[in-house]
Amino acid sequence: GAPRGWMCRASRFLFRLFLRPFSGISSSDMSKKTAVVLLAEGAEEMEAVITIDTLRRAGITVTVAGLAGATAVHCSRDVVIVPDVALDDAVSKGPYDAIVLPGGLKGAESLGKSSTVKSILTEQEKAGRVIGAICAAPAISLTAHGIGEGKRVTCYPSLKDKLLESGKYTYQEERVIVDGNLVTSQGPGTAFDFALALVEKLMGAEKRAATGKPMLIE
Figure 1: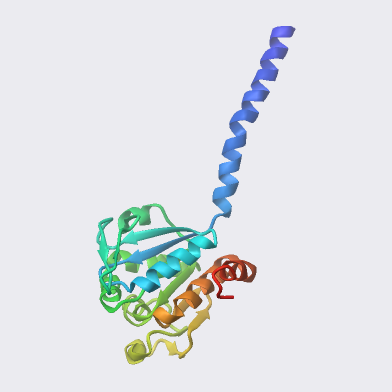
Figure 2: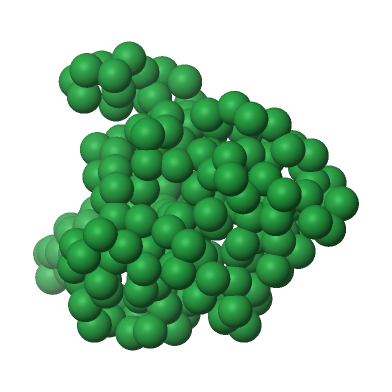
């Protein structure tokens, strides 16, 4: 009768009410690309900030993870950056569509000595997800962890010999090299190219162009 009909209508209304926000959140989260930028003491700040900013402009959710915790990181030219989270916390929220390693000799050395960094990079590579490294990071951090072996890479030019020590990489002196899911670049002056190459790898050429144009780059 009437009470039963009213209850059915109320149930359908509540079902739609509760379903709608969950559906919206799910579809939004699934389509959103994610990246984590690893930050250690002595990181090259231009390479870190330009990459973080450019990826965020493209609509990518970027987490800045501090190797030594969520405390302030003093970069190579005394710029201070406060990470979003500690690396361990960032790892627990992964995986990410891209893992990015800025350069800076001291920072790259610290990333190259971290067992946590080795673990997440190894898993990232095995899963076929994107890894980006710039400046000292390809020659110091990636080689230390055996990441990207057999691929074409670039790095800061004076670190070419260090990169080639193992005999497991092919060095090419270009601003940016994309080989499969590995993106490498040379240094501060190529940071915009590096960041936009990551945007293109994650979201396509159209998104790269749309991101670069208002920045007066492309």
